[in-house]
Length: 542
Ligand code: GLC
Image (cartoon, rainbow, N blue to C red; front, side, top):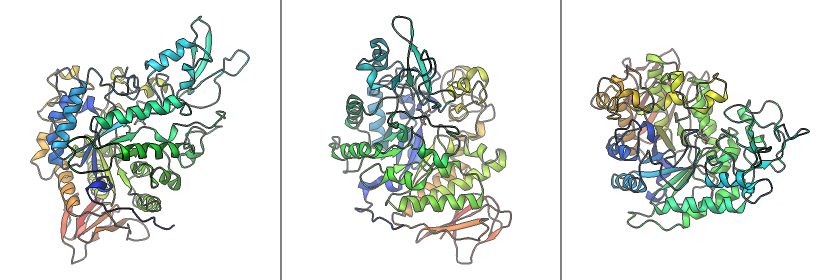
């Protein structure tokens, strides 16, 4: 594979190549009005935490009007602000304060589906089969003698068929509509010109409000193969081949994303912007084939695509080494940086994923130093910097549609969407002025030590580790580093150079790894044993 040269210098314009972006899930971040649900004014009031941490950008997950069938990813108005989160003026204030602190702002765009309460879907259901309004979505007749079977075998990401049959206006059972997620999230038909035009309007709307970029939700699913062929048995089972699914990774995505990129590049900078900088798009594309994934960030398309293979990799030296090397190689082929990510609002928290308890904490710290040393961009999900574990949500408080759709076999993702602990000894730990039982999700009783206030001045805390790492990383930029890993063939440990002044070594194995004599330690995820790097430890050194 030959590396594609990167056009242009990595100056402020191309800030995103090395940016650390912090994901805010607003209902669980900070509550400004005391009703128990986090909101935009609450987030604005807490931006100093992020400035202190040293992030370059924030990405705010959907804050748009929504019936909340899927945590806000079921949107009824893509350019509005949900009443429980604030007003458009509150959003403007968040952008203004972020920019004043030197923090860029990304928002979510959810183009695959709308809410079933979106005016377009209400219109489509009312207008009946064959109407123009139905053509914006994917309505089909059912199979079987009386249309009683779904039009094909596609499965929803949350379990069960990806089709729901509607009652027509005259009361008869009618057509089916496609929803790759919950039934409350009907899929749009991206071959319809009005859908294309509407999302250009949405992008422009948020650019005009001053955002610096977009995270594109399930970017790989917008187009479905012509004729909607069956997927066949085993769909969703082999992620490495999921680009072959008829509802994933279709060719027509790429011209669309090139159009969006041109729109972002051409859109005039908002008044008062300090320096001309590129507006960025980051793809949430669940594609694991490296070459297919790299196409989303080929020149002229998006700039970033989350590296989910890294997030999903178990804490295992050889597996990590392979994922890191392959990811770097895949992106290098198109001249794009890797976008590293360890957690999100959809994933089990690293502390719990890597073994839980002290072991999980130790590994999560080492993983953080690994991620933040790697050349490229990184995303940090709220609470990751506090080392929060996955929380248990009682059955009667679960909101994730996975719970019902899986007939209570999967508890879903709520355990990583618990309100942040800011200060104090008991829930709600300064998250809200409301009573703990009225908060968005219940917080564990033993989180006092994990709060921002408890960790802020403790140099052994994971918060201090993230802050130190972000500071050092900024002092050691790595715009052109071609990643080369070194280490023993058994993969127990590996090391690499981020820049001339900073090397990183991670030891996964039981055997301690001695540092060479010249190395000066800059930061380590756990105390070293003299000059030895113990198991589950990462160290940064000169
Ligand atoms: C993305 C979001 C996830 C949501 C899904 C459907 O994967 O991250 O939270 O459920 O899209 O919109």
